[in-house]
Length: 416
Image (cartoon, rainbow, N blue to C red):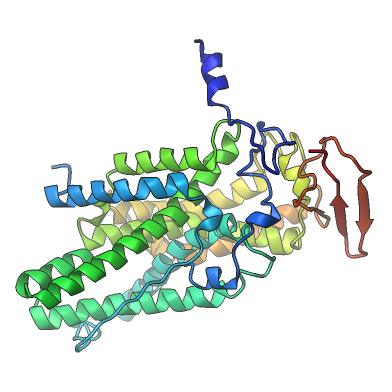
């Protein structure tokens, strides 16, 4: 079998569902095309709750057991069926004295540290919100996910606060500053090996396991895999990309990021460097340039208006690079690289705000100077038993209407 024969074997096979009439090609497959109505199963409640190898032998055993549990989930459960998550956290006793630290900082240094903390949190959750469309596509309506705007902020604040208070309480009671909840559970159990403590450790472990599985599925498996599927839809489906990324995740040895709090915080902080320019560009493009209007069929059309120049939108690329690069020297320094001037460290500490403002502003300016084609026009496709792409044979004549607001509504019946 030659290489071409191997590629033919790897091609995504056609299905006998609503996508039967649509070919898998360079531009999409059943996981990339708009979601049929019967698979838009997410209601408001689903979005309200959304949100030395360097490891010891016991840790490696636990990691392997997690993978054994995780693989069947990503293989057998489609994304539109993952809806509910319940997470309960509890902290008792005094909050401790870490909330009043004795470390003395100048006003300028303290201010930049606060900005760095905001950058860390905002950058981390911008990564999640940037991928939220991979899940809102399963919503029953366009506004089903709107309540998540409030619940996400509340969840982030409460979770971070409980983590700080728990660490502070443990430090006051046991004299040990421990930020990792897994190590914290082991430490407390080692000092109080009672039936009550073991039961508490078990339920805490189940909670952490559930959250880890959920986060890996939603934020890593589906979302990052969607990007790969968009690049190679002829060969990559949701199930295939999940398996690929799970294998790559093991090979990356993620436990190395958790060896100390500083490394972990640095990794989280790096999200702001790369995600704030991207987030700003997406916001400006959707709300200000296109005014929330998309020509959906053209997303799947070779050489269409969203193909730009060789598949690259130079406006977005240039704005992204200009807004991102000033933070790179400080980022290299933060992860243990070369020494840099204080100015570069400051850029890194405020990278989220700087990158967001610069990239967003430049992207808006570039689009005003060189407007992209197809803005201001909305073309929708009814996915429930109707055509998703142009060029599919139909049984009825295609109709197009204009509602007077620049909104074109297209509906085409498909012969199946």
